[in-house]
Length: 210
Image 1 (cartoon, helix red, strand yellow):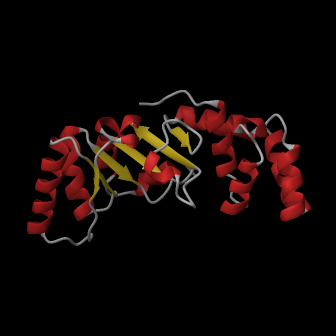
Image 2: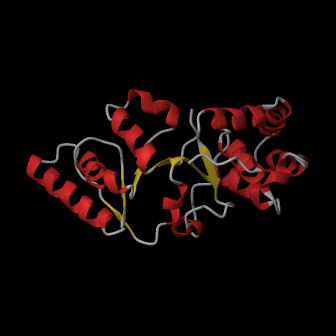
């Protein structure tokens, strides 16, 4: 379910969406602040870092992005589309990811956010050309596991992913991880199935919508 976007998650989503900055620079900027939301109150820390470690042009681009109202535009777009950003500084961020060296700075979610911290999970992946008998077995296994309270995590492709989704869908214990932002799901052949996952389970991606 969509949740109102906190100032912290809004700040991280803004930084995460800057396509010209590498991950290491985004992570370094966040380390400069006790609270990521302070990026908007004291942009000079980030500007000085970028000027010293990247270039004056990068620092200027960052400063202009804040001054242009882009942070508010990003938040408005996420709220309009029912996408909840869950940053690495949020209490809802998956505990299994928090201690990774290169954890996603932000996850973008649609659906049941409580599934992010499911006690028991199992990943199911496989070929897009999974043979029918193995697809049927995958569906059966996913149904049994999810019915027992285990959250099934898979992708959104045809074959094994689709079989896992179909098996776990009724239980609601299903997380689908997409390979792109939500604005690109329109071209997915499994769009209808993804919409069912969003309604009954959870769909997430580490990529901003666009």
